[in-house]
Length: 294
Image (cartoon, rainbow, N blue to C red):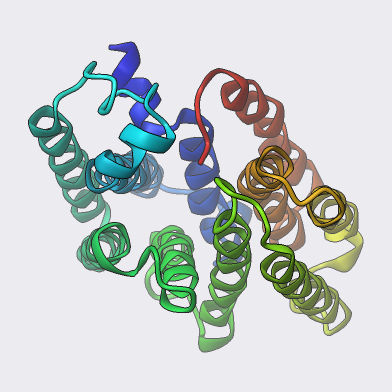
């Protein structure tokens, strides 16, 4: 059982769950008194994202097994704890779980889940090692996951709210850029570009608040937590451009998705609900110490 937990990256899965919470907050769902069916759909979407994210990350290790046998031989597949065949079946089962539960929530949610699964598979198999399409593809997966959360109220999302999904596209692209040198180092230019994207997102969040699209008063503290985590980690990785510092910056980027999503929750509902989401951060950090993140 433990090797399968290692495969799905529990710390990362927690961040995917917060995407659903954030997406639902953006639609105004958290400000409503949900019906029984809406509450059930919310649970279905959380189960869906666990399956979709888990399937994507397991399939990534399936396609990376030759590289991992050299660079990360301790991982479940190259170490022989799980065979390629079993890992592939596990990935397909998780994808199927994610898609089925999304359809339980709403047909539109199901279609979004299919797009997420396809995007994840394309990243794992084809675009991952491409300098431009890799980060963009990975960002699209995360943006679609936020939209999956928005599908809780299918009739509600406006074009403006759907544009919110561009923020995780930019940010996850920044994380992916940073990760491109985590094995060998020497990727200062990529991290500088990633940090630039972080600062663009920081500016976008402030602009959204100042234009009262979301509440800046409710979300400002969360914005600074998110940018602080990433700025510090990336600056360290630039100054000490070695694999260990780069891996820490990547890990920090992944788990900082939680305060980023807490920003949405606070800004579109209330800071108290943002705190509830932020409480998942220490859980993710503890999981990151036990299980791989990258």
